[in-house]
Length: 68
Image (cartoon, rainbow, N blue to C red; front, side, top):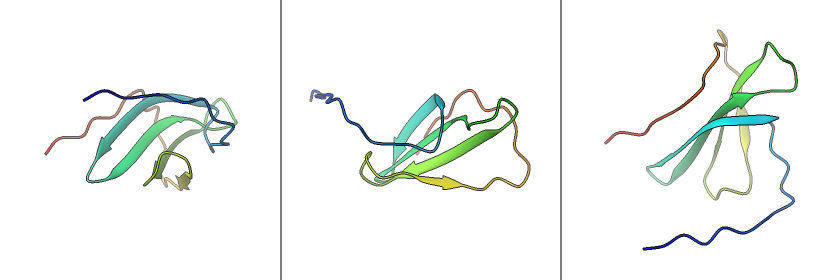
């Protein structure tokens, strides 16, 4: 199976994405929001429309993994 990547003008709520995982039909990304001291998590079912998750105790996530 191969993946075809396409460029898109989709706006996402993270300025920089440091990690991306896919599992259970859901994409999850971690990265930096618009301030240097603010990490974030976002998710998407289709890879185009993303929802930012409010994290009560943010940390500096640099990666993410899915395990089944």
